[in-house]
Length: 280
Image 1: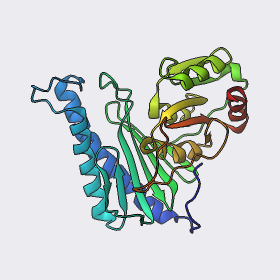
Image 2: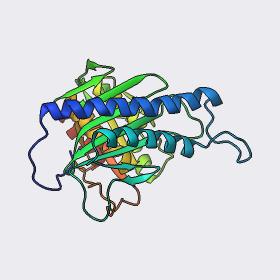
Image 3: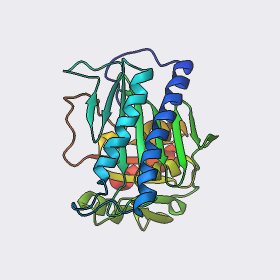
């Protein structure tokens, strides 16, 4: 959960339907651009400057601009914040009622592997009401909203394990930083199976019942906000490592934690409390 910036009426179902429709169209347009470059370059994104192959940053910027064009065409009063191109349709400290936030490079490392994802959120007065995780390479798209999460259009729900030692858990690689090493040392030998560096895709898998826990750190806000509706819409719990609400208000002046956010997402309340206890 994320804290609300101000009191407001909830978004109605019809408006949510419209937002989801445009979010799907926007992410599909961005996915087509990324998939085109992925297939054309043999999935390598770090290339010598002397080549004519565009850098991954340029590709992501192109995809973000395509999304922004579609979003503002249907919602000219909304603001947009992309990881690569920054803010659009927002100036000063006044933030519109609706803000779209996205990270199209979540999980990109040395090679543009099929496990990366695009994370998108629609934020209403500081609260994320729609989240979308899309992997254009595998063709898997997960969309979360109030009380409902779908994976390629099919409803999904989290699936709890009877005991923590049977849980499937995705953890940041222990070599990433000291927080990741701490989480690994506290959890690796107390759970059933451990997986590493699932990034935003891991939250999609948790929502679909394939994982019971995701323990993450160094999460950027651009990718954070879209995770909340997906996990909660599927019946899961998502907080920081202390069990507190996640808090980041998107605005041009918002500060970002130096080391990012530390996140725990779990299939159910009991499992979540057990993980929080182990990390304390």
